[in-house]
Length: 320
Image 1 (tube, rainbow, N blue to C red):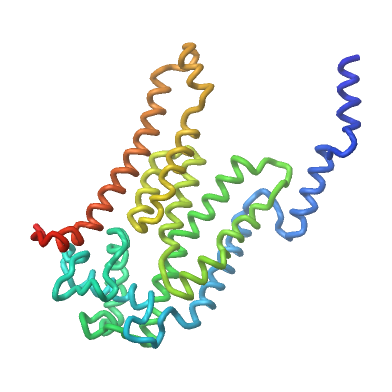
Image 2 (cartoon, one colour):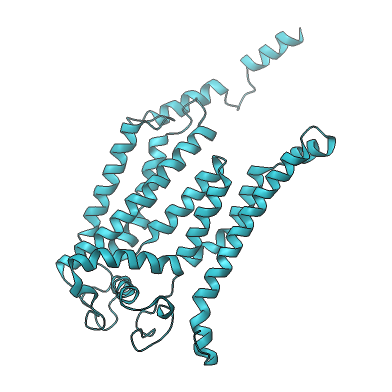
């Protein structure tokens, strides 16, 4: 009788409530509005979305950039070009120091070291095809169609090599952990919303910046945490902080998510009761400690390198 009563209650849900079957049908109807609506991200579907997202970026990059034709400081395009010029023609110890070759009042390098090395890598590529755009001093405010194409290409290639794979990885992992099998959401829609984010596209490919690198590293760190690769997550998030210091704000969130993923409160009880090996518990806590320590240490190192030249300038100390 109790079993039949339970079946009757399941078959006749209270008024005002939505049954599981109705909810699933509604979800399928919503996902069906997208021709490829599915909670499975197929290779050919993701390829179409990636190609379309790349095309949108190319079209946006054909327009003007920040500060185009507006001396004397121009804009962020000139800042990125100038950082390539400085990292290419000056020693590493002078990148963050005001010298005769590096006037910090003119777009001084104000991002962490990974951005500096990224600028150097791009400088090697551009210098091989358009060296006049990176000549020390005389290239300030340099503008040409060829240099614009090369500079735009560095952003697009960074986006495709860093942010795109991170987005696909994140959607795949998220679908595997939370997607279920009821068509409650659309994996292609999620990937499209990430890759076609108008803010990122307009700022990086219109205004001109490289946010795609730090955002891609951060998104990759989230995917790594969700997939259980905590050491990879710590490395990626450390790189993100060393590319743009603003991601230090996510340090607490990263460590909290990683800790919740590695060990839970019931597991603490299992360890206390002897049901879970203390060695396993300690090993998991060591992962948490490693994630926290690696990110904190990288943040400290970045901060020291970033502000070292300013301290030397303030106190008139010699630079080693």
